[in-house]
Length: 439
Image (tube, rainbow, N blue to C red; front, side, top):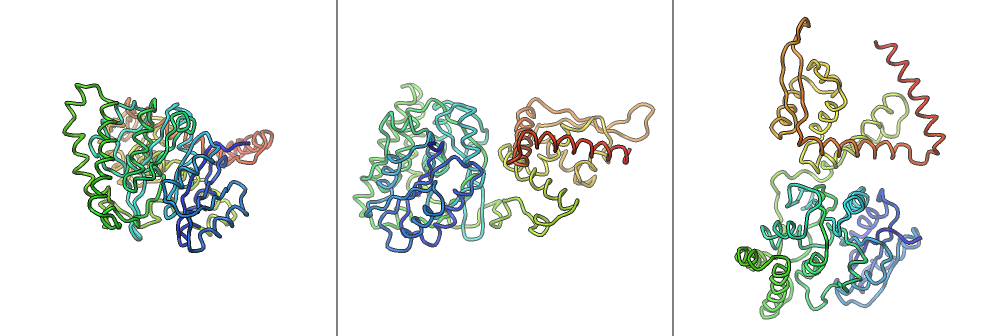
């Protein structure tokens, strides 16, 4: 059976980072994939490492060739690809475990021709989130192009590795990388692809770790005339793209923004080697897990694992909606808890102190997701919280319910329908016993 996704990794003297990259792909939650490793004439152990991955996992395919550059490597890999979708990764980077699953789901459910996601920038031991479009979801090419006008030379739009492509569209229009260009070649491919796309899905979840080790055009051995020629060629592609996407009136109205590309491109889309605002220590962006508790036995360990599994699936949904995990958890609790209620009761369900709960509710009010009023109820002592979800909260809660469903499906992986039904029946009996004791 052909894989659903082909993930292409060009490899050149990458022995120090290749293992991390390939293992992050092979350990994807989404299993129906193939990995195409293109060894571009490496002089270190990269070629042997590629063959080793292929021997251990039959989803890995290896192409060894003389050094001809990353564009040719990607072109040859695309010609080999069998997947419905194509995804790219660089050998010194890596992807989150849910990257392919979330991108394929977005493409399937939306019917869009491209999925673009946020990503993490890694500098040393620090990591920060990067994404340019705040509101996710499906959008037209024209809408996407209007966002791109704001930051025309930005990595978010220019690179291949934070996107999912449809192979049939690539083949239909004969799209490929231009081997003559060694600067912004990814961006030129994207411009051609987007011209033929019907719609684009923006996934505001960071799914890729970009390690800032690549050199910019300035640091490479290019003569000034060649550098100028390449930039002129790329700009012509960019300018023609907007002439194609926009009508004549809109193009004239945005001409200055289009020409801003020449200014922004002077920085070569660089990610500056510095500590970014809001950056974290590498690893803190993931769900933290205690290995002794993860592997231990007993009721407390079971409770801990169940909570961490839900956090694992809920956290990306929270990021997608620009919420902290704590805010997402409180919203989920509110949606599943009868209101009005006492603040103490809601805090108990959420596992938060009164002060932390109040702070979280205030943030959710500020983000326009809930309305909260605290008042007394006739003939009942004390004040109650009256919480109302706003219209804006509907799609957010839907995202969280999908995360809950993913968590449930992950828990029952490998269960037969009969085993799952038996487990749920026994669990319901156990919960009934708990309610009887605690009431």
